[in-house]
Figure 1 (spheres, rainbow, N blue to C red):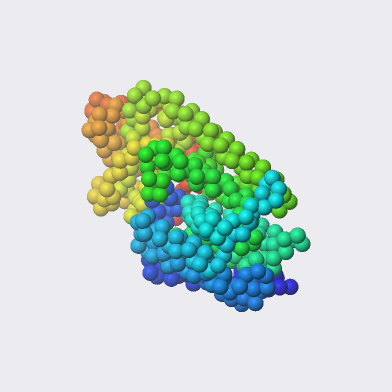
Figure 2 (figure 1 turned 60 degrees about the vertical axis):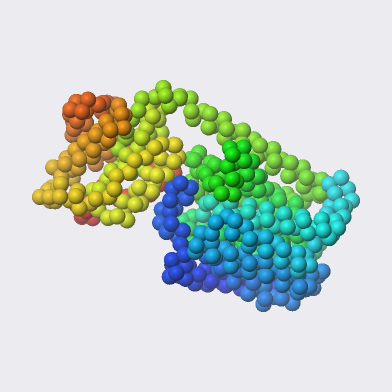
Length: 528
């Protein structure tokens, strides 16, 4: 009955505080703006998720405070834990708002770890995989706790790259510790209460954080959940191995990221890239939900296995995780090599006008990439609103990053485009207005190609069956002859290519517009 009450109260408070914090973040403009260097979302998303988790967790914990001191812990331990979490919340919120530099970001996790140690939390001993125990002095215990908490907070911070990923994995960790501490052999009702509250609060937040996310953890949340999980692992009797089995794969990914960046001569904490495991899974073709569920599955499997394994068994399970990560590293290295069978110097140069990512993805990956050194050109001032223009541009940036392509972007000048089609507003689709639009973008692409000494040009306008392919090719060949440049002569079934393009766009989770681009095509579409 106690656990049922905890679940209900934790879930209700988590949902309520998440909704409130979401509105506050929007009101004070504490939001995460999309940019496709690393980020995948296409619109601004509220941050400050850590505030909702902090409030729901500690308020629920306060309601059940009497249960927190029925074991070996006292209120000083919990006070140190609370103060550490408060430090992370303050620092995280400041970073969410002002984007603090790394040298200021690190201060708050350090203060949090010190608070836990000053509160009296320590590790007296841990199980020896070979039998017996390994005892720790106070100094060695403090060092281990300090390094452990810094490591796990930065693991969840770097893991927070896909909707619901860090939240879900941490919730699984909390549930595993809960199951561990209600077992007859390791019964710890105080830790069971705290870990259950933590898990349910995260599940409530996950309702809004799972793909497509309506709110993000932010720095305040991504550090906080790792910190709480790390402390729970320590105060449950030094069950660090259990937590490691749950977050083992992400933790090893973080370790490999640090090593990889150091080898490349980069600062591992100031650099950023799209080579984290979760990004690589996305680049392989998984959508966000599939990649996140993969991590959930690995964390659940190894976490549950830890419930039934003794110390030596946990050691072997951790070793299997290390071997798994090593195999993943080798696999992606082989994939990277396979992706580059032809040197750029051996490829023909191509300037590809791109109208949108869905029309470009299949054409680029399956038709052009193996033979051409491609530069993308985003020139689409015919798009009716700046918001729509930015959405399409963001996904084109993602596509360029995915295939390591250069991207040239023309400024948005819709008024100038409207002047070009003045008097043709009532023309039907595939009519005279569209012909002006085809020609405008093709001539701009050809002239830019000449400027950059690129020998070939083409356009993704040819992909859609809603465009006049014959007219586009006619204009392309004419412009090519006039400017002594090559317009590609590709032979494919337009409808079949379009179908494959749409299928790939769905698979990759691309934003797909419901009309061509201009306000006139939108009106035509609305009438249908």
